[in-house]
Length: 337
Ligand code: KIV
Image (cartoon, rainbow, N blue to C red; front, top):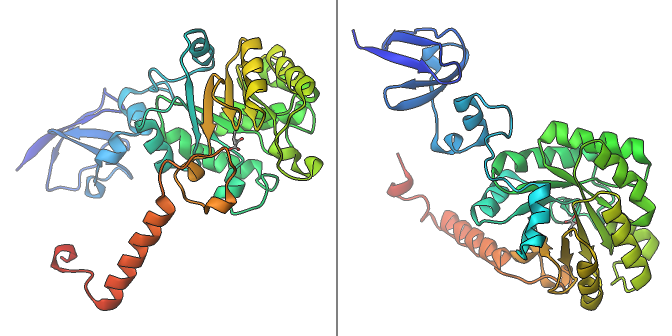
């Protein structure tokens, strides 16, 4: 009878000898090593073995199970709010991009970025809406949870959607707490300057790191009457310093003149992250879909730079696939069983 030893990795005290041909039942579901293979066993039936895929083995959940760690503690060397500040002291630029799903976040992390923003721009580039106003807290949480699972080193910041920044400290703290609790993200981003300083302070005092956001604040688009460059020096400097004084660990400066961004970055001890704010900010952020060229050039702002043309690549690949299906040249024997 072929006997093998089955060691439970999630509960190292558990060990079974089992007959590989029998429907043996480990005491509990979990991660088990049998020989040199690792299996995720559920419903306590060996007949339901699922081979643990390499993709699952590289996830945070696997590490958590394997080493019995609480969520996120396997995220060694991850970017944190204090490290963010240290980057500025060390003169190291901070690289940020947005992401809204597991596979994109994973690619960004593997490419070595420092922080991922689950931006409310998901309303624009994922949901196809004209402004960021419609995206809900539940939708932000849904997307942020996927992003957090994909990364181990990059910091994950999640936008507090409209109107949670605007409806007082209590609602902002409770929304920010839900984001951290339900997604395991590292921080929230909150739009607003002097007028939101008390809210930022309340969220920070609740133990939730805050990235501020001033200059062009897309949640105020109705007030501006459109998306325009913000040039009021007194307003911008007042907002940025109020955000710093309220305890934010950094601030996004969106669509302001480069000279003003330089002055603000010099004045603040916390890092500034620019988008349409010139080269002298302490870091930069872009919307991933725009820098990868998913949207038509006409739909994206001047401050974006296209590093790829994935829109054209996708259209070309899909057109070739369609042509091959229609002509009968896909699939071939190579793709058949
Ligand atoms: O929602 C977003 O993507 C943002 C960035 C543009 C900074 O706020």
